[in-house]
Amino acid sequence: MANVPAEYISPSVMIPEHRLAVLLDQVQDNQVRSCLYHNTNVTPSLYHDHVCEKDDFPLQTVLELHDHTDEVWYLEFSHDGSMLATTGKDNCVIVYETSSWKPLHRLEEQHGIGEVGGVSYVAWSPDDRYILACSNGKDLAIYDTRACADSRFTSCTY
Amino acid sequence: MLYQFANQHELHNWKHDLGRPFRVNDLSICADGSRLAAITSDNYILIYNLPSRIRTNELKMDDKLTCINLSRDGKTVLVSMNEGRLLLLDAETGTVIQRYKGLKQSEFVIRSQFGGAGQNFVISGSEGELNGGLLGL
Image (tube, rainbow over all chains, first blue to last red; front, side, top):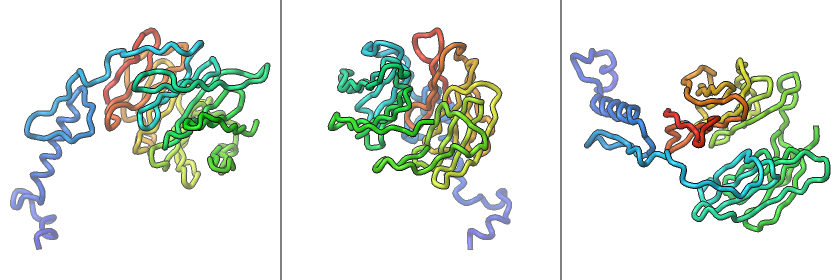
């Protein structure tokens, strides 16, 4: 009985259903929106005003990696965060381990003389097993990070 | 071009989609694979429904585009443009939701990304500074 007539009754006569829950949701959204360094997925509790600490926000340079010998063009973390793949003008894909930041693999593209060099893009497969690398020489290479073997896959040329 | 990974078979090619030759400079796919966004060298943003391969949006922008990223839920798209402009657009309607100021770009390709737990903020590189700029969402 309660649901259907409620839509036709003015709120000043009968309070809408779940009104308190709606208001509390709005307060929560408001607190999240006004949190300057908000960096969490956890829904804030309303026992106290929500504020994220500035220290939890990434604002400082922690490390610089100098293993590439030329411009770095693209980089991507693996989906589980345990590895980082970087590529650049030096034709190299370097895979780092993020716990120690040591280079795990160094994958060099093989290019014939006269081909345009540099690896412009790199992507991880959703399970982080494979790395896709695009070189400026119209090649698409797929590397298996577990076997450290690579199977070449050449795109069509246009 | 869309390839099948297991057998290297070409699944789809959008070469003739616009009726004119175009060059894709960057593309992004959302987490569930439902949407694909790409930027072309002639300043267009193209948004496709990936399962059906159909283009849902073609947005002409007024300057060169350097980078594109779809949010994890596929609802918004972050686009970096020349002159240090960074825009957040609605992926369905193409309207500008937010602009981010403060970054410098004149010579190099600057990339930007969503960041943080729940993609709460936007981070971008900037010329002339050691650290990239951090811009709130």
